[in-house]
Amino acid sequence: MARRPERKLPKANAMITAPQPEAVSAGADVLRSGGTAVDAAIACAMTQGVVDPLMCGIGGFGMLHVYDPATQTGKVYEGFGGCPLESRPDMWRDIALGVTTDGFGFIVKDFVNEAGAQSVTAPGLLRMLSQAHADHGSMPWADLFTPAIAWAKEGWLLRPHVYTVFTQNERKYGRMNYGDKLGLTPDGRRIYLNEDGSYKTLGSTIRNPDLAATLEVLAREGAESFYTGSIASHIIEDVRSQGGILTAADLEQIAVEITRPLSFGYRGWRVDAPSPPGGGILVGQILRIAEQFDLASLGHNSTEYIRVLAEAMKIALRDKEQFIGDPKYSDNPVDRLLSDEYVRTCAQAIRSGEKANIERAKPAESRHTTHVSVVDARGMIATMTHTLGNPSGFIVKDTGFMLNGAMSTFDPMPGTPNSIVPGRRRYSSMAPSIIYDGNDPVLTLGAPGASWIGPAVAQVILNVLEWGMDIQEAISAPRMVSTSNAIDISNRIPMPVQKGLEQLGYEVRRSHLSYAFAAVHGITRFDGELRGGADPQRDGYAEGVVVP
Image 1 (cartoon, helix red, strand yellow):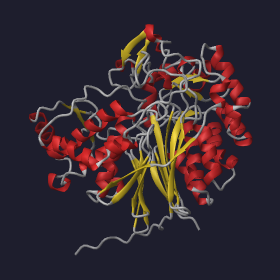
Image 2 (tube, rainbow, N blue to C red; image 1 turned 45 degrees about the vertical axis):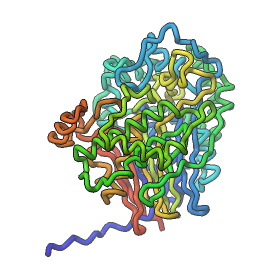
Image 3 (tube, helix red, strand yellow; image 1 turned 60 degrees about the vertical axis):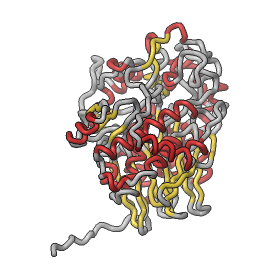
Image 4 (tube, rainbow, N blue to C red; image 1 turned 45 degrees about the horizontal axis):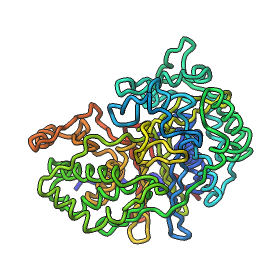
């Protein structure tokens, strides 16, 4: 019998995974220094904002799910702002042009809802991270900014995925190209483009000394400088000078919501994910409906397996669009949607061959988001998804950071559940999740990807819990999504499976990408062994750390 080579790498007792190598390194260094998972997630997030500037940053918002081993409990920090207090439901009614062709936002004349000063909503990320650090951090706040400051000063290499985002064609969907957004302000042109306005080439070094200086202020003065201090004043002055409606009151009133996670079962495991306005309900419905089937007998990624998951996804998305929203404005029937009676009814409809009808998911937040998952040596878990929503291109003068353009995700027509209302937060698909065996956390994961997040996270959970895959194998396995009446498949789904679905009457859209549909990053801990996985469609990796 052939021998298995002995694994000689040291056994990690802490781990981090994220889509950006520079950010993973920053978080890993914090773990080596004895920092908590929350400390590492903050250091990672600050660096992500430097090296992936259209995906995330201090001008954005996010959701952080923390497990504390001292209390054996989890909680979710919601760092969302909302529509500016001076916004009006009818402010763009007369210049509304419809919905983007891919369903990721609304179109308004001259792109004013997604680019420039009017597109900005109140950014809650830093206040959320500050609160989480006060609750669960151990290292000094200022130390967590050191890696990000260094990358901003010394420069970072323009990596393949970031270059793709910088240069991709968004006009075909009805959005402004991100390259145009990079050049929207003089500072953006100076930092991210060549002198002649052309794109920097792959492998170019990008430096942002203005952002380094801003991060130094935040490190020294704390997050409140962004909301009530010198940075806040600078934000409001610049935004309003360019026709924006964000006010000092918008920044001051941002409140961090701390909630208990939505909790549901899957074949004896406990899955905890964010409750509304987070996207845990989507993951929950997909898994609870899938649980009603003998999936192993269907075969992984077979025609019937994909049909069952596609219908579960469509039902979950249909119900989310109909029933789920900001809990301050919506009565979310979460218990009913996850009840045994309801999911059995849904499963029976799928067995009978019924096809849920969902022409197109209502516009969701941008796919351009990022994620980090961390487990520290004490067993604390921090899993966070954060974003600029839709990058606005508006770089606050002399600060180096871009504000979010999340107004593009609100309906410019009055009278809908997602219309513009002062202070309203939009439903988010963010689903940083933790799975337990009894009281022991065994899997944490999350992903960027808007409406694709729930389907992608659910598939990876199934790959681990149902099929016994290693976390990297589970993440790398071919995926599919169904956010309309069509089924989208990655290019590695076998052609006979596609033909089988088409024979059942489905429109099947094959992606040209081998790795597609959200970018899952996760960590498992079975039998005390940490293993990490990173989605190959991004540039990152998982790093294990040995903490003395």
